[in-house]
Length: 333
Image 1 (cartoon, rainbow, N blue to C red):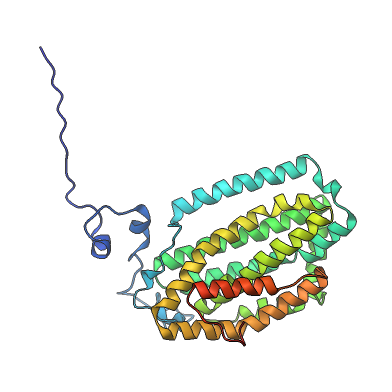
Image 2 (spheres, rainbow, N blue to C red):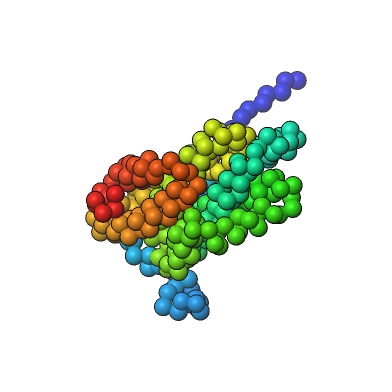
């Protein structure tokens, strides 16, 4: 008796869902495509939001920016919930290992009083800036249009919350979990002259109703300043003054900002390439906000880093804008 095993290939009736097939054609789709494109409700709403009765629940007019297809804002990282959580979990594992190493080796004892005070009054108040960034991105998630942009915004909002929490943990590690450092940082944020222009910028921005305008302020202007000044020049000052070990505690913030820039640069380029009207609108927003951002971070830099310069940060903004196809005027440069 012989046993013959045969195999049969079964062809699927459909390669993907109908709504994905209409956009990408009859071919296998990625998980990112299946859970990101054309899934936001757009018709048959039963009521209008009570807080904005002139809008629908999902309304593209929450921003002055216009797009023929709001799903053009494809995330080059192709993050959906599953892939985002897995990626950030790996980053968090590394961060937690770094914080545990810092505590285990008692590296805080290597820091001088001068360095500790610089961290408390010059770095810790940025937890409030990160909390503001969280709200900026939450605005994009709440009022944006198209799942590809709204889901990426909520991921970014959670990143900023995590960054605020890690900055707070640095303060707790400095004072042995008494909270005294965070109280000093709060007092500096509320009363020190170095922080008042930045505090004013954060508080006034939270009254802005246009979510994409806030996106430009945060992802292009403020984030560029943070990367170059806070996690660049301040980090270098710490290295030169015996605070090198703090770098392992801020690595998560640097990695997050670098990752977010991959996405935000793509969004800026897509929005600007849509139309000349969009490009002019974005450039006008930059011209409106950039002087305030320059003043806020210049004021901080002069007080915290005597020889600091924001020129490199401004060059970064100009470079990112150029790559996005934007032409900044002299008043905005």
